[in-house]
Each structure stands twice: as C-alpha cells, then as structure tokens.
Length: 239
Ligand SMILES: [Zn+2]
Image (tube, rainbow, N blue to C red; front, side):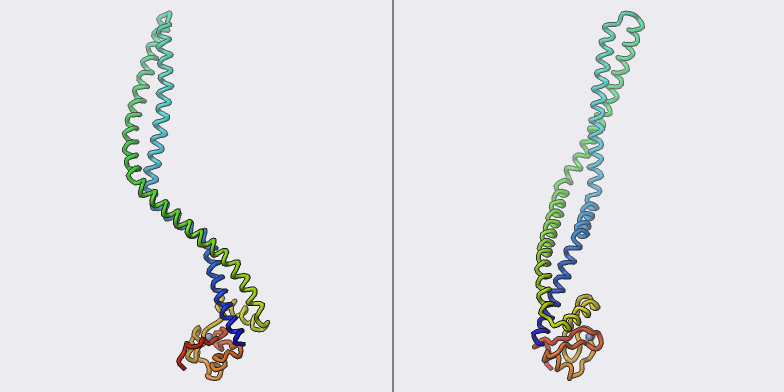
C-alpha cells in the first residue's frame, strides 16, 4: 500500500505535467496570433506611410507611361504637320501638336509634385525601417522559441502518456477507479497532502486515528469533506 500511494503521487505529478504540456500545445496558435496582432498594431502607423509611398510610386509609374504615350502621339502629329497637303490637315495637326504638348507639360508637373511627395515619404519610411525590422526580428525569434518549446512539450507528452499507462497498470483496480473518479471531479488533482491533522486542500480536520492510518500509508483514505485521496509526506509536520 505504501508503494501504491507513492505510485499515486507520481501519477498525479505525471497527470499535472500532461495537462501543462497539452495546454502549451493547444494554446500555441492563439499565443502566436496575439504576438502577431500586437506587432501589427505597433507598426500600423508605419504601414500607412509605407502604403502611401507604394501608392505614390505606382501613380508616378502610371504618369510616366501616360507621358510616353502622349509623347508618341505628339511625334505622330508633328509628322502629320510635315506631311500636310491642305489647310485643313495643317490646322488639325497644329492644334493636336499644341494639345499634346500641353498635356505632356501638365503630366510632367504632376510627376514633379509626386516626386517631392515620394521623397518625403521615403525619408519617413527609411527613418523608421531599422526599428521596424528589429521589432519584426524580435517577433520572429519569440515565435520560433515558442514553437520549439511547444515541439519539445509535444514530444514529452508522448513519453508521459506512455508512462501514465504503465503506472495505471500497476495500480489495483479499486485504487485506479478511485483515482480516476476523484481526478475527474477535482480538475485532475485527486490527491491532497494530509498535514497537521487536516486536509491541505479543503482544510477540514482529520481524526487522529485516520491521520495515523494515512501516515502509515496502509490504506487509501479519502478526505471526508472533499473526497481527495490523502497522503502523508514524511518530515512535513512536527506532530
Ligand atoms: Zn479535503
């Protein structure tokens, strides 16, 4: 019986560790999401500026394409002007040459304004980039460490489950069903230490005769109040 109470103590320790490992494994996605969300919130302002820069850069690229297209038209109308054989063709070509020239000039003014804007935005982005990159690296490191630790817990879990099965197999059927029943009712903690003539879990007093039995470890004794299996730790009390 002394061996059996010892086995129960080991079993409870194993079950507590199994519970911890499972909770670590299960909570990994939500813990990772929380870190990512925290990072996203901290760089939100930076990303808005970065986004504005990307948009301005794309807009500039578009305007440059527009200028090139307008330039081609301009060249065509200039050539039409040379080839004009009557007044009407000549007037039309002159009007179009002027119109395309104006459009090109307007587009180029827009591009210049955009270039100033891009320069300002680039300064802002470049100023904050190292800090953001450092933050990202820190987040990546944190996630990698967490994932590695969870992987270790996952492997440990496999071992613990096998160990648990062995321990359960060594218990007498009665003790085993008592343990499983109380563990289910008490969130996995079926055992409580008996110390100074009371149950350390629910604080109720234990009669001296029962306490002495528990101390001797001669039988599985359940607390009259909370139902936990009581055990005595040698050297834990002066009585
Ligand atoms: Zn109790």
